[in-house]
Image 1 (cartoon, rainbow, N blue to C red):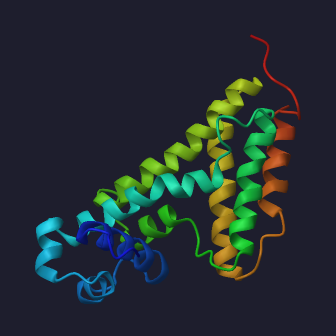
Image 2: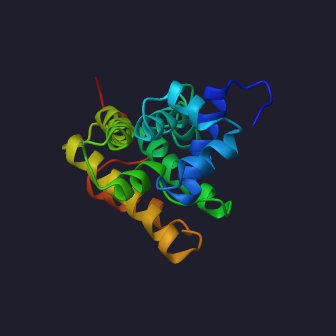
Amino acid sequence: MSTSATPRERLLDAAGELFYRDGVNIGVDALCKAAGVSKKSMYQLFRSKDELIAESLASRGPAYQALLHPGAEDDRSPRERILTVFERQDELVASGNYLGCPYVSTAVELKNPEHPGSVVARHFKQQLTDFFHRELVKAGAEDPSTLAIQLTMVFDGASARAVVRAQPLGGIGGVTAAALLDAAGVRAGELALS
């Protein structure tokens, strides 16, 4: 954490790290201590811990997505771009610091779909499904909406397996996603004809 960071930035950074590692039920005292910020300052910056949970998830979302999604400059086929997400998930798990999908973890822990943190988690999970959907439309998949949801479920299932088994995935997410793509006729190097 940068010493030039504002108290708000320090709180968001500390919250992101601690919520991911220890869960969202970590105490405000521990959170403020890690951020080097007083409780009074925290409550001046955020109306509640719930708001801090949501904003910390939102602030980390783009970086997490950038780790997983191929960039717009990646001109490989839609199938290859989709499978890249699963390859990158494998790499994250193999790094040894993977504690599951932060959005699924938070939503499961909160257990309240209306909690601000759950709303943010749902937004970012939808962005993954939307990425898959866009690629499937480019590939000319027959039912891109259903297949995008299935691919998201494979991703989430692989995340859960990595945490529960405490071991690398060994490519199982990518193999499963490839089987779904094969069954839907989404082949390597193919683009839908316009």
